[in-house]
Length: 272
Image 1 (tube, helix red, strand yellow):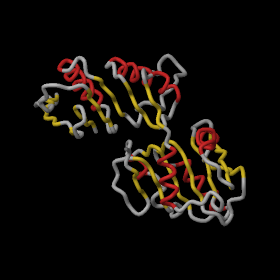
Image 2 (cartoon, one colour):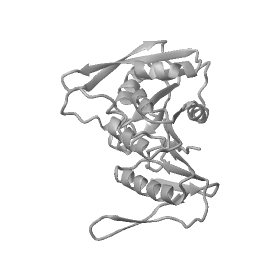
Image 3 (cartoon, one colour):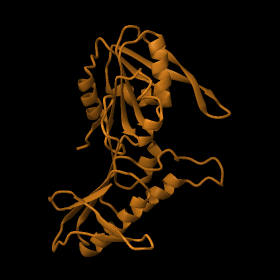
Image 4 (cartoon, one colour):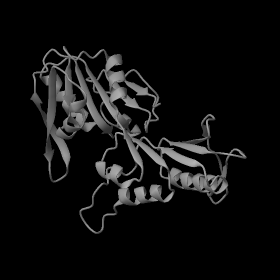
């Protein structure tokens, strides 16, 4: 979803109609003067890329001296941060080139999945998710002395472990079928989770397989309640097992990309 504001006004959602051939007719609010344009993009689909290009092009023509910022908490294509063959298209590289072509004065992302993406965007600010994680921990009643902080893989541990000092910590080592990439299970390294409530942190969730296998193993080891935080959570989580498995008490995520309604397990944290 795209919205924008002129100077210090409120954010305005785009008004879009479609011609019979499917092309867009976009309406923007009238303004005689403008020194700053802020655009907020909570990604839903790739059609929004063209909408972004159209509105930025129009506003830059109308206000050539204005400062332009883009708040894009979820970076699309971040998973495609490398290619292994000539036939693979390096979509992240070209997406970042597309963003750079619009000449934003600042682009803000949140906890970007790949450092490659942050490196490819001009004048980027990569926000830490720490404050949102702390808010989720507070809502879950997490105790740094009594409860157990768990990172589902070594990448998550490297990314987040320096943010927090917890007395009881562990991380997962995935077992995969390397011919298919499918996760077969997970082993827990670190402190004993028996009898302790768990708080899991990861940056992104599609179907939740890594956290599902983490929860399965932690429950086998005798843990208590399990709460989870994802910086970004795709709507496809509803097609996975986390909502129905009975092992997860809370799932916290920002509203960067998730459009699912809150439920008894899912709780979205609104980005500032």
